Length: 151
Image (cartoon, rainbow, N blue to C red; front, side, top):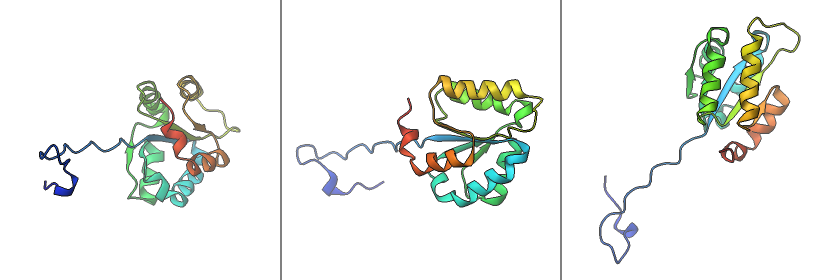
């Protein structure tokens, strides 16, 4: 790596140590079965802004998003009912996830409803921005600085 001499402080001719890049905020993307198409459409329409985040998604949702927008940095976890919701919850508890977009289907009972509620509980407990529908997700993605303000 070559350091531009103009960047050197005149009193210290040694090259400056490059600062590490600011870590990108991480965002979780989750959707119930009947809302997966909506979340994929959201990802397609907001792919530029979503590209500024490290994305984590439950299994099928992540696969569908990657199929529609292969350039997005999506890390696929397990399917929600097989532990993916809990994996995202653990990432929230560790402080790695800074926001949650979870398109829920309020009309269909979920056999893993306990896991879904636990995920939402953790998002509330750790005070991260959480969108449960497209209207709120649109607001969150329009203000990415909101993700950077969480601790």
